[in-house]
Length: 308
Image 1: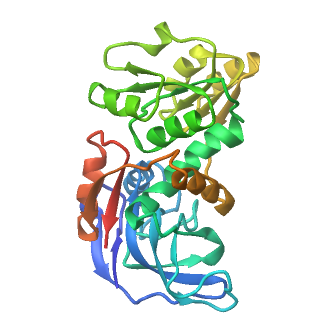
Image 2: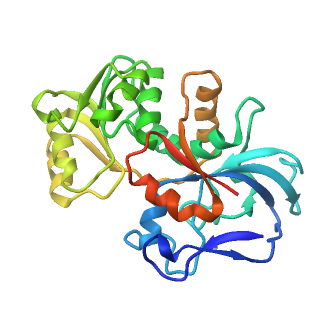
């Protein structure tokens, strides 16, 4: 089968398309014939080496995947050959989904409904669970509370806006000029063009801020959240911001993803009920994974998907 691998950290030029032996599922595992692969900023960070989550190369990138079971290992009764499935295998370990086939633990997969195509299923996993982690698990968001979603046109952001609205929150979002109308169309009550306005000058007393940037950005997020509120950061936070949050009784959480199928299923239920729509902005063939990574840096709306 064909797979994308890399021998060293680096730019997109390190990604290589190679032929390897088709993997066989072990006990408790299934093999999935891959139909679509979600591309995430996490993939770029791991490829470049500034977030060496799975150690040193060689390795195969990728976590979000959708496809059809084509082999079943010993002891698996929950899935059968022919079942359509999606999920985020092995996260935070190596998922190896940039491939034509991938072996996955059966309990890490969710059945794909007939009404959901493989591209959107593959795009759903990581961003949906991240939004769920911030909004439901960390913040326990309640109807009527006020939320700021930064970079709301991106993968996590566009899901977070919709989930917060589905739970009855008032949603303020930031987006670049070209994405303002798109984000408003997702249901945001107010959209701030961050290229023209500083949200810290117009917002205050928010219950939850979702911060995709981490680092120095967290100080700005803390400035607009109420005492006792929540800031959920997708990236690392500074010690001084942890101290400030503690002084004000703010929950400051660096989101860490350990996928659970019940949470994926909860997000899938929102999708199938029409409360959330995952947007796929572009697709690339597997052998152009590097181009997909480059395109991710152009400010896409929603998600990019690879097609084997």
